[in-house]
Length: 149
Image (cartoon, rainbow, N blue to C red):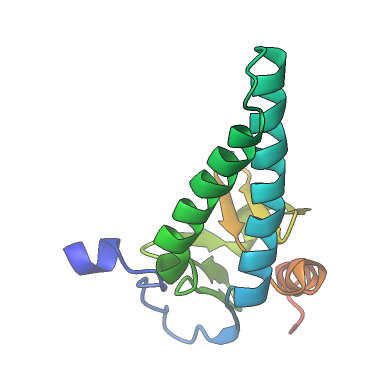
C-alpha cells in the first residue's frame, strides 16, 4: 500500500465499464522553461532585496536566486516528469490515489503552464507542466459534458 501512496501515476482502479479517454503527461521543455522564468524572477528579487538593504554586493542576490531555483529544479525533475493524470469517461485520476468525479468539478482554469481543477468541495488539483494547457483544459471540460474528447 505504501508504494501506491507514493506513485506519480494513478493507482485508483477503474470502475467496471470505465475507460481511459486520455492521459496527460508533463512536458520536459515546459518544465525547464517555467524554471528558467522562476530563476529570472528569483534573481531579480534577490538583487532588489540586497539593494534595498544597502548591501554593496547586489550581484550575490542573482547567484543565490539562480542557485536556489536550479537546485530545486534538478532535485524534483525526475518526480515531476513521471506524474500522469488519466481522464476517464467518469473521473479524473491523478498521481497516487487522487480521483475526482467529473460531476464534482466546479472549475477548470489555467495557471501558467498548469491546469487547476477545483472541486465543488473546494479541493484543488494541478496538472503541471502541460505542453498545451488550453487543450488540456478543453479536453477536461468536454469530458465533463459527457462528450468524448
